[in-house]
Each structure stands twice: as structure tokens, then as C-alpha cells.
Length: 274
Image (cartoon, rainbow, N blue to C red; front, side):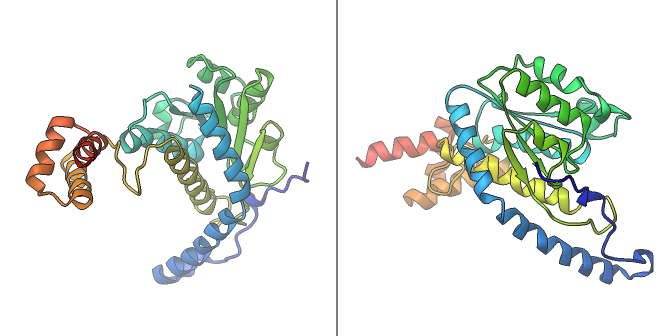
């Protein structure tokens, strides 16, 4: 294992932030943010392998769990919650768990991330088993809730992974698949909601989107299984239909009212063409 370096807690490369103008602060932050995508790109080989494992698990009836605390936990909950409306998958296919429970999404729960046993209890509520896969999200790589959650999973022969920004951190010990994205010191020392959080968000976007595409939840470049839950999405569905088949918006709307699914409309029109 690599020697553990707490890079996420390293002193910022910038000094006297309180003396800078708004424009100076924004320019410097944007300069730092540009480093994140390059750091993520270096991890694509490991992310590729992880996505392939996740796809195999989900095809076999397993589920994807994210566990995290604070910013990391919120990002996991966000990614999981966006999968059903975006890709039309069941609510329990991708599950995000945050230390302190759902209340911690909006307000920090004191001491929640320090629990050594709560992650396993939270996972057990879902009857987790060897079919599933668990990704621990911890920018620092030291969060007890996440580290011990993965440890318990390993002991129960459940496939594990982690996304962290510190090489050689404790969370990597219990991860079968390690995504270590080194983004360097934060603009504000230790504020991992900045570059580290951005890196985690980018990686989660990549994991869930690539997984859903490989599971057949996207046709061409269209979200054909999206939930048509508001006017904007309904209009997007109509647009997808009219662009593909060159029919009127009125006809597309009638078909969508009938089928309630862009995919099903595509299927009906394809059958008519053939």
C-alpha cells in the first residue's frame, strides 16, 4: 500500500485570501478547477473496470450502493436519486446512504461520520448481499463510517470500491476497486467540497451514466426511459420523437399520451415503418 499522505488537508497554495477582490478569488478558483478534469482523466482505466463490474452486478439483479458522509455522502445520494427519473430504473437499483440518515442531507449531524458500525446497519436495512456492490465515498479516505462500512462488506464477501483523493488512505485497504483522484490542496485549506467534491461528482456522473448506457437505458444519445414528470421533460420527449421521425408535434404528443414513454413511441413507429 502507498504511504498515506493527507493531501486534502495540505495548506492551500494561496495566501491572504481575505485581501483579494471577488474577481481575483474567482479567477484563482477557476484556475484550480481546471486541474480536476485532468486528474479524473488519469483514473479512467480504473473507472472503466469498475463500471464493467457494476454493469455485470446490475444485470444479474444486484444493486449499487453509495455510502458517504458530509459532502461525499450528499453527492452519492444525489447521484443515486437522479437515476430513476433520468433512466427509468427502479428506485432500489442505485441507493445512496449518508451518515446521519436523510436529515444529514440538509443539516450536518454531529458525530455521525465517526460511527464504526452505523454504515453496516444502514446497509443491512436493505438486506445487502453478495449480489450487490458498495462504493465508499470519502475525499479524505479516513471517514470511519465509510472505512468500517467497507470493512464489514469485505468480511461479508460483498464487492467494494472507493472514491478518494488521498493515496494510500485507510479506505483503500477495504476496496476491491480503488479510484484515487489526486487533485492537490484545496483553495481554502481542507475544504474538500471544492476540488475534491468536484472530482467525486465528475466520477459519479461517469459511473452512473456509462452504466445506464451499457444497460441499454439510452438509445442513440436520447434518454428514452426518462420519467415524463413535468412539462419540460414532456416537451423534451416530444422533441425527441419529432426529430427522429419527422412527424408533427401534435402527432408526437398524441402518441406520447397513449404510450407514456418515449421508448414505447419509438417502438410503435419503428414497427409501422417496417
